[in-house]
Amino acid sequence: MSDKPFNNEGGPSQPDPPPQAIVCAACFDDCTDKNVQVANDHLCEECFKIGYVPQFFEALKDESKFPVKYGTFVLKPRHYRKFFDHEFRVAWREKRAEYNTPVKHRLYCNNLTPSDEAPVPGDKRCGKFLGSKANIIPDGLHTSVLCKSCNLPTCTRCSQPDLDKHVCQSEEVDDEDAFRGLTRGVDFQVCPVPSCQVKIALQDGCNGVECGICKTPFCFICGKKTDQPGHWNTGSSCPRFGKKGSKRAIFDNPADPPPQPVFRPTFVPPAPRNAGTMELQATIQIATARLRALEAERSALATQTALDERHAEMQLVDWIRAQPHLAQTPEFRRFEADQNTLMTLHARVVGIRDGGQVHELIHALQTGINVYWALLPGVAGAVNRDSGWKRAEHARIFRLAAEIPGLRFGEWSLLQQIVDSYELAWNGRMEELRRIVR
Image (cartoon, rainbow, N blue to C red; front, side):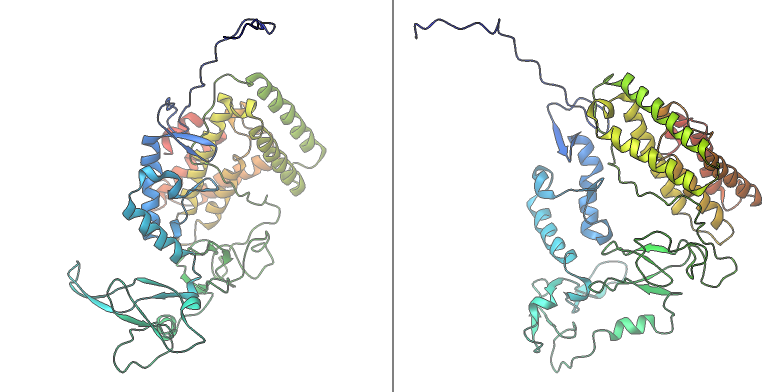
């Protein structure tokens, strides 16, 4: 042992502080001992198994559900190995290679194989993904690939079974036959991405569609990308709802605030209680006063006022979210939960199929619900119903609902339920709304 005296100038030693408890972002239970880190959040293992593991298996069957995301964060099975066995990981790697290959370059086995599966026993197409044509075809020469599943060859030039006396046919023949007699922009449309070119059909609803494969947004009528605002404004040749040239076609009003994309985690982030609450409320009060002063300077229904107000609200929310001591308050966590509730309500509006008479009401509800994706009662204490353009949207929704006969008890009863739910949000009754919208 050293004879050098112990230096205690720094004062008496202090015990290490106890580790901070980890709270599940979904169920809010303590998950310090068993938790899964997802992006910047933590989930208990049970919530992860119930809420996210099934999504990976669904993605194996449905390309539109690939990749699995937590908000905008892409989840990868290799980061959660304990939840997936070797068989799943092999299947995932194969599907990932398939999904990452442009549709036009994919080669599948088209050989018929015996099958006893219901509903009709007999032959079925193998359908095994064989790889990318770009990597298989050497200089355009005729060749074939042997399928590891059915052990039969497929021609890489025409994608047909390469059996005895095989003669190549155009691989587009079947595709053209399926759409023969149909009109592009009316009965079907083609994804504008050159490497994708997937054909889709639309029976009714909004003409703004998204490719289920490459996720590109485009217009069903003209086939052009719609990643810029104003495509469906009044004066355009493409209505948002209805057929081109129809008297019942509905266009966007340029005076309406543009829809804001909202990307939020499925679960509300965990947070310690009572941190920064007073500062949060003070920040909200100051910002609200500035917003109302801004509105007072201009006409209540001026387009620029609506855009400025909404932009300022979203800027405030984003700023609070970036301040841990404010974003971790119970008030702001309730705000995030309310946002998720309204996102669910908005999705239900978008999913309604209609025969034309409720188009305008659906569009008004989408705009009205978007209003509450900024400051909500959970943060500000009350919705700013003094806002002129918010009052106008609110009045328009109920005027349109009143004009539809038998809305409450007829075939659009679900739409009436959404109108009632919107009314709860307008009146700040978010706790009731959360119980209804699950």
